[in-house]
Amino acid sequence: MVIKSAVVPVAGYGTRLLPATKSQPKEMLPVARKPIVQYVVEELVSNGIQQILFVTGRSKASIENHFDHDPELFRALQEANKQDMLKEVDFEDLKANFFYTRQPHQKGLGDAVLHGENFAGEEPFLVALGDSILGLNAVSRAVSRMVEVFDSKRASCVIAVEEVPAQETRHYGIVQPEEAADGVFRIVNLVEKPLPGEAPSNLAIAGRYIFSPVIFDMIRRVEPDRRGEIQLTNAIQLMCDEGRRVMAVKLSPEEKRYDIGNFPSYFESFVEFALADPEYGEGFRKVLERLVAKSAVTA
Ligand code: UTP
Image (cartoon, rainbow, N blue to C red; front, side, top):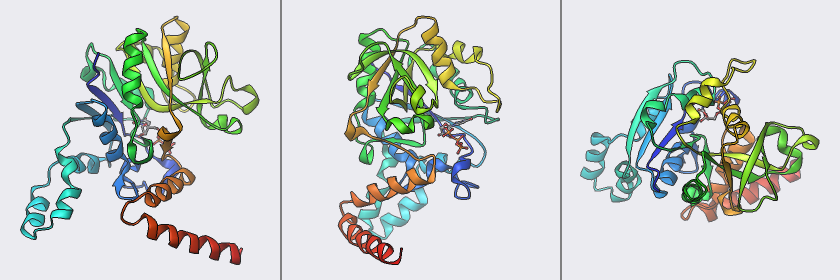
């Protein structure tokens, strides 16, 4: 089986990153050289995705512009013979078709995914969060493994999961494996942000999902939470409750998820990607060491 379509929700307010996100999408914040959402798209295309629907909202137009061809910039760089810089925009030629739809009210991730119903049609599809990068420089085969599992296990849903420290489970959606969890396993339950003692595992949902179209009916059955949001996790829980096969694929340590939803994680991701930069990484490491030594002296 091949899964060619992905829904990428990018309509959230990004309130945890204010003021940076007041008038620009958090998904466009740079991590080292590229905006977050470019890493996401490159990862999806390298895993066989050919059409991408962005679920956008107000003040998200720069995402659409970013993936559009810019003839004036192209001409200016060509006339100035700036071949190096032309290479920096060759992602415009990525072999993917882009589609856009708007989520008029930010009513949660479940509601955002529901906006992909016409796009997905009768086919299974991927959901990739627009603020989460998998792997340093988005090098990850996780989505391909998920497609494989979706097919071979005849699943209704496959979720990428990653190990998180036991004391941090309250920040994540945590899954309950049916049996001992190795690389691929069945999920029987999901718990949103459990306290460490109450978490059924330390395996967190990690921003990539494959769904059969049955997910749309499940989302419609979910009641809004007290903030008025439709949680995607609750729709997946309904799938588990009905005995549908919900599988997990564990990310390898190299496929670490960079969740850019809050400042500590954004800072860390930026530094890690900048340190890995082939041109500037080494110089940046020296600067960082100097800054760290200086702040240790003044502290
Ligand atoms: P988050 O919950 O991390 O995004 O959703 P948020 O709502 O923007 O964050 P805060 O809490 O205000 O800081 C994960 C992904 O789902 C999208 C977001 O854009 C993000 O890429 N999302 C979230 C939507 O598209 N619509 C929504 O209603 C909520």
